Image 1: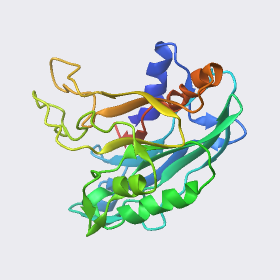
Image 2: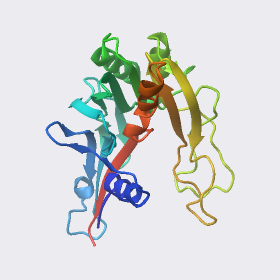
Image 3: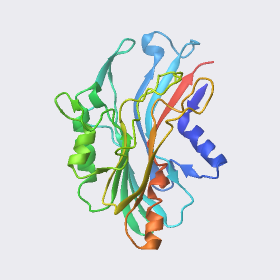
Length: 274
């Protein structure tokens, strides 16, 4: 059995009348592919019924039905300084995390969107990862959005230096969800009956927008009466932003964040032999 959670989500959105893709004609896929593991390394080859293959991805979903919206370029590099962890099963693993950078225009107005998943305190790599993102964005003067699971709070230190959230704030970005609440982490099996969110790890950072019109958390309430009780181990952040005050342009650009599904989707493709 093979599961691609990005495709599953796109299909579910379509049933709600929402049209998204991660394949942009003439541009490419808005996907970063990172860590890939399978149990062959521990003696369970594809023919074994216990065989598992896992690929970790960052996927940006792009709206396909908005007039005046165009993706002009996409890059999805792996960080030059990837973090490593020790796994009881696989030994030392390079996490191979990265980001997706999308350049786009809406109503003729350019902006940039980045989705990522940083290491946080797991390794010493997170500050370097954040620096790579800031360098890639540069100082274009365009409105910019950086979203993702940073695995750190604005006050955390990563091996003695400020983690990614603090670096984004120091670079002039605004945390659109500041004060909304905590986003991490429910029990891994999502069976806890009372929320145990106790950290703010998930962000929508903005720079260059005129205002943050609204911001909210989603997925921080149970959605089932039997396990799994929670949509995810993390809550998600949603924000609506305006770039310019003129009514027509504002209404277009206020929708910009929703062109990319509002929050980063970290897709995983999992394969199990049947």
